[in-house]
Length: 209
Image 1 (cartoon, rainbow, N blue to C red):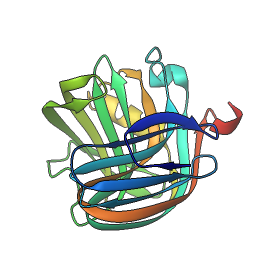
Image 2: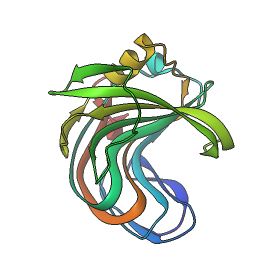
Image 3: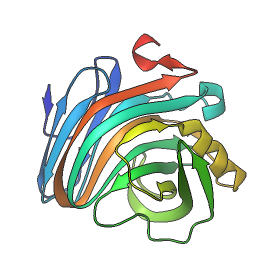
Image 4: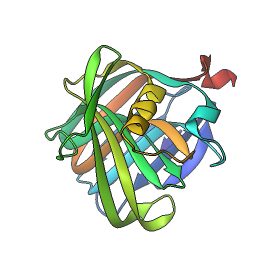
């Protein structure tokens, strides 16, 4: 299945989303399970993702322990991120766990702390977006970030460990809207092939939940 316009759907047990703003073009090929490939050209901002959408009624503690095992061939030309991405509501938060990036390491802020997990150290950041696109329309919201100090393109991301680390720093999470392995391009071109992507909740692969 090939996606070239903004859409949200379910494919082979995983929720997917293709989103871009004006300018440039992108193509997402939905492969089996959580896997997909993506390419983008001269975009302003584009996100390709496959994971799980929640119904905004449960905290991450109520959902349970989340982890993602992934592998990708990530070829950005310019600014892009390979990450776990998602949102919570009440409070409205966009979050990133970034394992690799292009020519700029996000988010260009001062770290609030660190977490060492999954064989690496991540710097933790909090940023604010004012009157920007969100899952609730144009809004002002916080972004939470864990950014790995050394790039990698495969491994396990213990998602819930990051959530707990953020909350220990006073960065409150809301009710879960989404968790997804994501390729984001910003004012760039590039391509990525996510050849492995398994989301587990309480140890159970998503395709069996």
